[in-house]
Image (tube, rainbow, N blue to C red; front, side, top):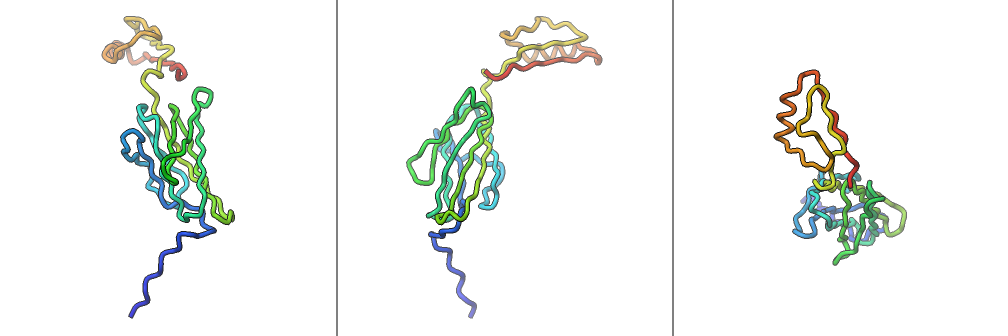
Length: 182
């Protein structure tokens, strides 16, 4: 007879500092958001893009050993304009993340119970900018005249841009200068 299958490791592994699960949900719809690479305990970098309408995510990060500690921190590429936050949630393994527009860098720190091992997982979460926050500062065209002329506060319809491009010669070019996000 063959030997019995190996028994699963005990839930208390004092020297283990990995995650066994990492899932991210839209907190309002509870719909799971798919990270760009499938989760593996030995993969430490992930990416997620979300619509601008998603302001808060729920993160579930379960350690392999129930005795390991998990800590979270989040930083924004636009910290002068917005301060992303981590909130405790209704369960031990879940937290809520309040996102800023643009890149939000989530750091998940896992420490073994005996503190001999420490691992970091990173999730770069990009919350798309709202269409309201992306404005053009300038639009110039050489080799053709813009009619109507561009002004930063005026809506410039795409069909007018198409007509403008059709008028332009092959020697023309367009210079577009975006404003910084508002």
